[in-house]
Image 1 (cartoon, one colour):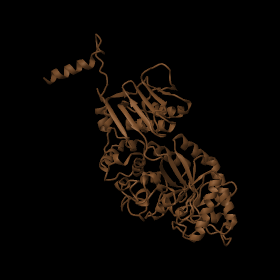
Image 2: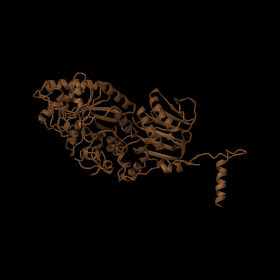
Image 3: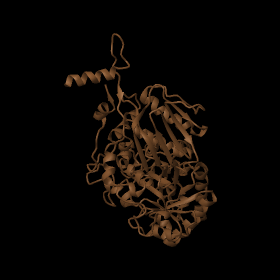
Image 4: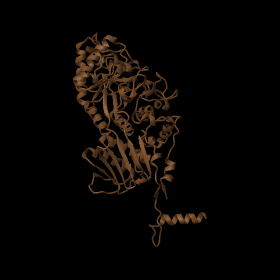
Length: 534
């Protein structure tokens, strides 16, 4: 009986390919279930139709308008490398055809960053209201393909995409990461890689902490010693550096290609030792302190009473605003323990107006809530307690959520984590995921919040592997918190979905933390059996 079944199956496989002398056995794709795909952030709506689209030698990518060409090229490069096929990119043809991946702008989708991804056996269509939405649809499509496409080499996997319709849009418009490049300098190539990685998970802001006690990292042409002197130090006293204005512009441009907006931060009036060491005249006593290589906070302050201080700030903000197309400049304002509250309020009130004069909006750490906030100023919640952020809401400000107890990805996972801090406790992967923006703090509702940001301070971070170890996989959960509605999020379901990203994280060569709380599963052994019958 078994032999009869096998021979019948072999006949069916060979039928259509049979000749008088031979039978060629073809690979047959098994249909995929869109409902079982492991997308992060979790989409709002998924309707599976139980079949597959196969990317093959005749597949093309078509784009509707010139603004979508860079996204089409981005997708084309990914698919060409993985498949070995030509995968041509061209403007959408007027006549209907099959075996296309089409990128289409439409007014039928109201959300600025939302998208629809419709896949059938003949075509894939990514539709959105904006190019950003198209980009996020492409990132979802990327995650529907085998993880092996991420290796940068040709894969032997059949490139199948499960059929169905995904309708998706973000809960919050600001979904960000912060990278402290002051305590340890992070070079341009590593920043570009970080942009690439966070954009896969639909994060759209990168906040660069460009100045602190340990180092000044952005060239200011009107104050060149900031980088000549202040850019030469870092935690531990190792070799450091800074970004020229041309390098900073290159980072901004690269981020734009991944639909990420750069938000620069100049921390003040505290966290300013690198600036004070560079220019003695910024100190009240006219004497420059030594460069600082430690990790203590709260000991430095610009001289509030000197008018030169505000000329300095105006020059810095003027040059930085000219380099930054995004709407925000972050002015720090945290841990200014060496500045009296009276001086702090006076200083931050003047500084906010300087930022506004140069056409930008202010973000400040939550201590800024003690000042006279401008209508457009944003308070970034970071403290152990939410009092400052609530005060900001009471003054009419919007809130950016980064509570240290949940969102600080420089914290250790546990007591044996190889790097990280623990001043606010340990933050395992479940703790980083298990919270809701709109219910976290009484007095702060969804209407008050612009989004979420995951800060990475770099006291213990020295290289890209360190950055990846502390941020991944926690930042993936942060991305989902900012994107997916609270009602659709559940740790029990998420940890399983996250665990199935093991192959993708490894294909991307991410030095992630393999938390024991996550059931990590390699799909490599399954893919060859599940995707095709030979």
